[in-house]
Image 1 (cartoon, rainbow, N blue to C red):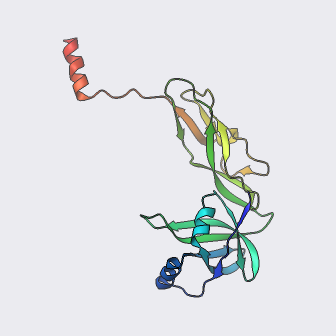
Image 2: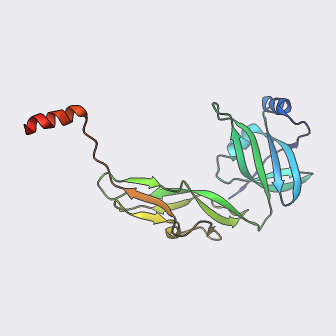
Length: 196
């Protein structure tokens, strides 16, 4: 995963009014914490941050006290209707440090014929990996799987350097059979008339 550099600036004003002014100016208020450091308050460029967060577990580089530091998004608060980013919490990480993150699970291939469906039991797979080498996602083949089949966390081949942060027996995906549509009241009444 490549790192994404953001031109953040230190934030000295706090409170709702200061946050609103920052957002009007195109910034997103944020706080960086971790490694026993006092929290660092920043204003991050809104558009650049939004684009960076489209990548799961994006490794961001922000200037803190004149030095570039690695951070990972930990919590993102969004506006309820517009879905714009209101605030972001960032976790300070170091090169070589192991962190636990959740990565998306993508599927490839076709299920066995018969209208079967894939149910995602886990929406994301918890793994532990080096902070500067986080995988974006894992891909699982569902080719030919029939109803009742399942894929556990232990069945998934992880990228080099990543380990599971969940029980290997945890079900990630399962295949469910197509259900026959329930008959409507009219169809049920017609069936009774035919039988009589």
